[in-house]
Amino acid sequence: MISNTDMYQALVNKDASFEGIFFAAVKTTGIFCRPTCTARKPKVENVEFYVTAKDAMLNGYRPCKVCNP
Ligand SMILES: [Zn+2]
Image (cartoon, rainbow, N blue to C red; front, side, top):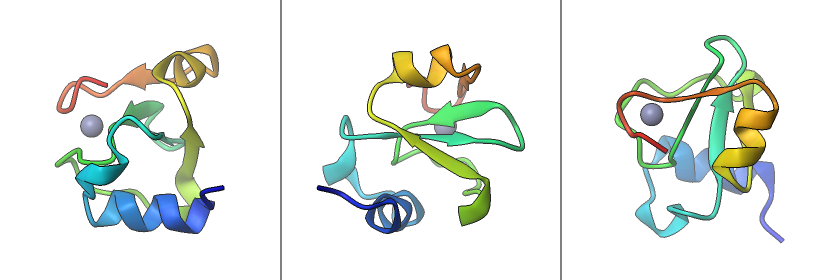
């Protein structure tokens, strides 16, 4: 089971091995991203993690225009 800490690390490191494993949604912007997105990374307290892009959208997030999740 992958922890939020692991996912946050993967997000900050743009770790491609986590591509398709999770999506990171940013509470302050209402946008969600792939782990490898080149957009500026949010603070850990502002991130929520979702397993699918659909889950993120159902929670009111919009796909990022940079990484197109
Ligand atoms: Zn993005």
